[in-house]
Length: 137
Image (cartoon, rainbow, N blue to C red; front, side):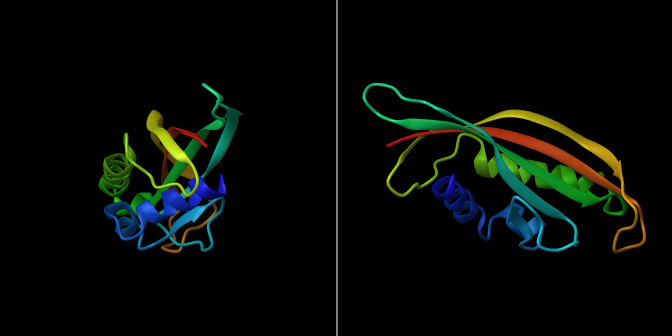
């Protein structure tokens, strides 16, 4: 996952989605309480060995978060920018060949209640976007 994570982060750097969240694009957990933000991580990984090559099929989940006070337009824009960046994209993986990066699912935006947000509100929007990455070495 390290090489895939690095490729995902490299592609995101200075993209529209990266700018939407002011650089708050994190792997596994947020490093700050600020919104909006994106957190991505590996959900599952299974061997994908074919024709004398070894590989992996990895389900990667992106969680998009926005304060409800910003309006649904913010999270919808984030989703649009994420999809335009990663849908059927090409990622550069060191020592491996990416066979595919395909969106498999979107859930949301969902309203979630929290104790308190930086702006004093208590509701965020949360959208989940999943991709399947397949690579071989």
